[in-house]
Length: 404
Image (cartoon, rainbow, N blue to C red; front, side, top):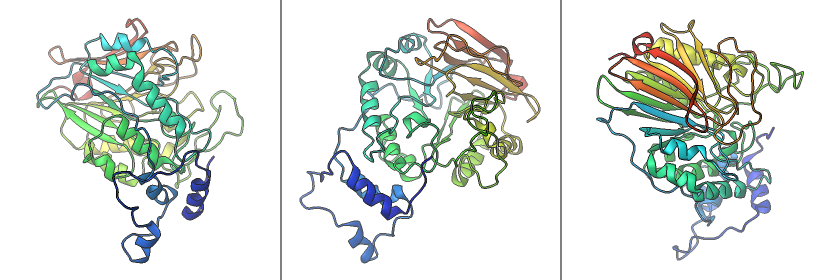
């Protein structure tokens, strides 16, 4: 695990080790004043973190910015959503035929749920050449371009499009990773995510009585180290074990306060998107289970805010599944996990799952939240590479407090 070092030391390290030279912005006549000079005259505070120390370097680093092609605008306040598709674990290094199936599905919205590219910073180069290359590859893939043209998109990241496998808040180059994410997905210059730490976001679509709130959590920027297992590979303890350490964190205080405010916003149905699983208790890989105090805080927040109609969507696992817990709030709290879009690890995958509904599904898949407002029902679906439903769970909207 990468540890934080003093900001100046890290800056000196990366400036000497970067694989590409720093180039001044050619639009400027003269170089900008140095950060040291600005600090000496009191116009700039000393950096508190490695990513703050690196900001002047990135401001002057010239590179080919990877950008997704433009797509349809997001739905508006009068657009009634009836079908939301989502998926995760998507490498542009190979064909992604399932994206064409999704593009033809007539969904109102598609959500990339993390590991949208695999650009791990294996060289530990501050300019993140692997991540930039992966984004360029995805932007060029014809299947992605067709899906992008067909449906509005939202996105959140996970570890492989953030930094490296399982990394959290200590990733020294996460500031540049955030820039790449926001630029690729077309965030406007005045987007609030450009002026705060983390890429969490939220939207409400549809008119009163049929409002769908989509809450996108950032489970990377603020997350503390996980507790390594003492029995690597053992069932239920494969890589990490739960820890009651009160100093461990998942979302960070700023995001927790933001989430509370979002859960108090009026909506009939709420899709809470977490890149890693929330309910799953049958494995020792990354999940909210590894930070039980934080998971309890999430459950408690949903309960105490009185947030109705919450459904959790997650990814990461290279296998899909449906989950429910009826012991947390005044209504059953469902979770649908979809993974992967084109990176299956095996033909089938199963594990103990005390909260899971039925078996997991490991081949390529995507998730669909189908909403029948007239009939008062919700259908949570896992679909295969041909678009056929392979796992599903019907839920009356009234049962989860989502009825208008």
